[in-house]
Length: 116
Image (cartoon, rainbow, N blue to C red; front, side, top):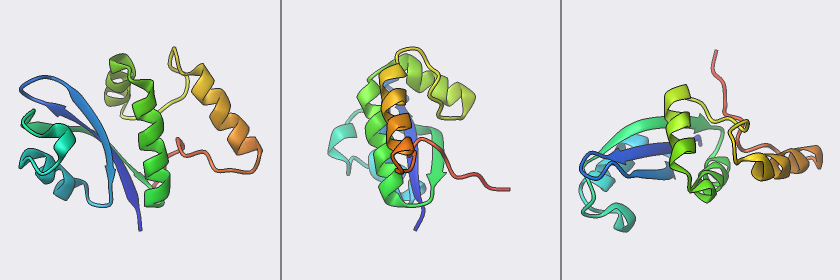
């Protein structure tokens, strides 16, 4: 089952929220109906970006790494580029760890699934 990483933005506070789900539309509706504790009473929320991954486990790993950045500039760069990249300023330590994981035979969770 495919997984998705998504970025939503509050239209009332301009804050961003990064999440993952197997059903982005349903999850956005949950955010907008105050069913998600972390975003309750901060909406309404609008989708700014989403990316599909081969499974929910990889999507969860990507979401966790993006949340660790805690950097509005990086989130806005993802939205503008409509892509998750590792070259951004301030990401070198995370990028190095991902490369080491990949060289050790692990998969790189920041490489999205491409569709032809």
